[in-house]
Image (cartoon, rainbow, N blue to C red; front, side, top):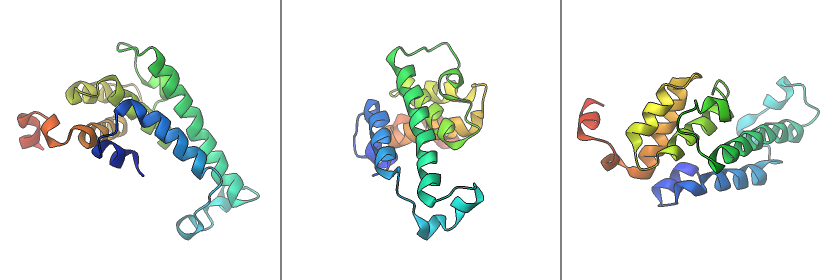
Length: 149
């Protein structure tokens, strides 16, 4: 189950890091060769499983940074300092999720926080908006924003 589907289905936003961690652990040794093909060979790994587990371990590391940031949320410090600048996928996901989780009921604030980060702010804001939209639906956004989009 995707994290977006979880939000659309009514899952509490605060549970997302736990769901992500669980998914990463389940997928850690599964290499989907039907769509990843021989990608593992480009990274000079001995096996597809070595390649995929290393990638999931990197995801687990950033999820731990996300969890640490959520213990005592800081609304004034750049989220990139906690979860990464978002130039790589797992950091963009974690930082976008952090921005969303800082303001789960206030999508405009969440998006504003994401858009002014010091990192890959357009990617981070895009992910933050996706989390907010999945959680709140179209009604979570002001009519002015909806009509402009």
